[in-house]
Length: 195
Image (cartoon, rainbow, N blue to C red; front, side, top):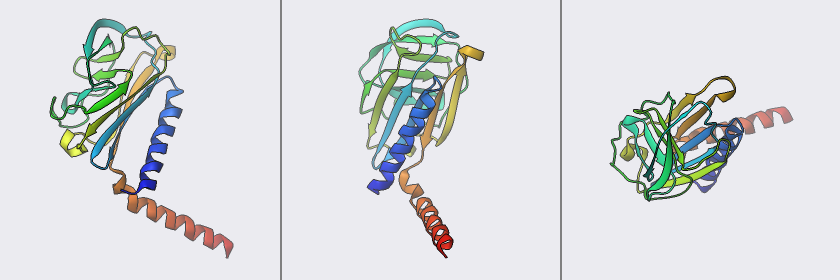
């Protein structure tokens, strides 16, 4: 894979997360990087419109067909589970436990569509920053059964409105031709202006 292309896509993903997190939202980005699938998440959450359902423990994993994703540490950690969120129902056809996360770090962030739950680190306070990452080594979108696209779940309204967005970005190599074509277009336009 082209190192420069991968770097550009990572910068784009980080910029997207940085600008979106200003809006008090949680943003999760999933990309294929060679033979791995990388998941990163950041942002903040407003808990005002949510109800604390329970406190439990779990580690990173996903079940796309049921709209379940949790990122951060792979070992179980304590999380507070909130109800009152809706939107994402599924983000692919992969079933639970097909490919467990290989590694992860940072804050535990989770979403469960079938229960309409949002999970955050135990003791989380509205507005605290969240950052986490998870890696699926030797995996691909196909092996995990995830479908590229943007998926959003929301809660609250007005001043308590908030969201979690899942952006699944296709393999960077799929865009190599497109970026090359765009670059050629810029070169052609630049040369035309000079004439």
